[in-house]
Image (cartoon, rainbow, N blue to C red; front, side):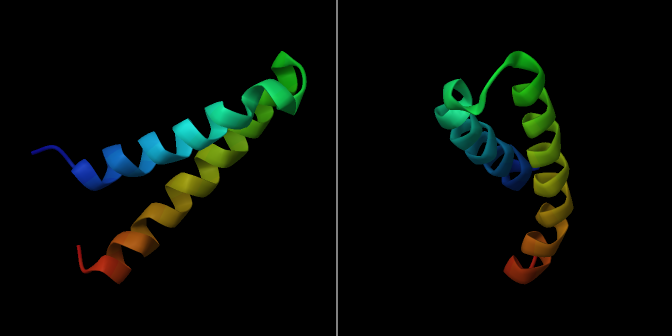
Length: 54
């Protein structure tokens, strides 16, 4: 069964990051920022899911 919460969560995070990506600097900076945002998003998802009762 597909976890739609995770799909929507990462779509929102990636969409927001992509909206700001051109202004974040060079390729290395965008990769580093993307990695940090991914770690934060992955860390917050279980907490948010527990708050929603999943």
